Amino acid sequence: KQEVTQIPAALSVPEGENLVLNCSFTDSAIYNLQWFRQDPGKGLTSLLLIQSSQREQTSGRLNASLDKSSGRSTLYIAASQPGDSATYLCAVRPHSGNTPLVFGKGTRLSVIA
Amino acid sequence: EAQVTQNPRYLITVTGKKLTVTCSQNMNHEYMSWYRQDPGLGLRQIYYSMNVEVTDKGDVPEGYKVSRKEKRNFPLILESPSPNQTSLYFCASTRGENTEAFFGQGTRLTVV
View 1 (cartoon, chains in turn brown, yellow):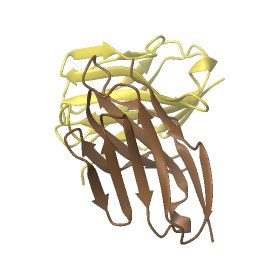
View 2 (view 1 turned 90 degrees about the vertical axis):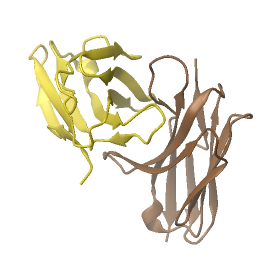
View 3 (view 1 turned 180 degrees about the horizontal axis):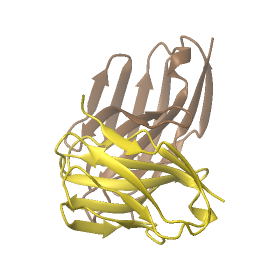
């Protein structure tokens, strides 16, 4: 059964720092991997989608990489801002079964002004 | 605007009183699903639908029902809610297996 792990569970950084969030998954048979942002008590906002055949995707200050063979993805945030404070969730879509997305438990990011 | 809409956003109810949480998407997506999110447990899938009249159980289906009579709607039904169903619920949709997932804003349900 696919499992997704995110490390660290929480991270606090000063404004302006570049940072990396990590995501690992146990089964490399995936269609894609998606990074989401969730503000407290709110819905999930899709940040980046990486197909299994891709190595990375970029959107503004965000860059996500995927190493499917090793079961790892990273989300790089450049020049962090207080508005980036949120929980970041990683999810994979497995090839097998009917489970559309398997989520990690997230990394709670605080960017201090 | 492409979106997934859930209603209500907040609901407090009593044990045993049937309720329905509605979910609608305007993107003509084939796939829809329901998740619940609990502290320390993350997001867990409740039910899943690949198309009209096709539904499958997810990881935590006990105590829930769904229906998919139209492509755009996927309501979640709690026939006899219990306090352990107090949670934050999300509906999601995708066009296909290999495409981006879109989520609703969530429904915070409290069962007393």
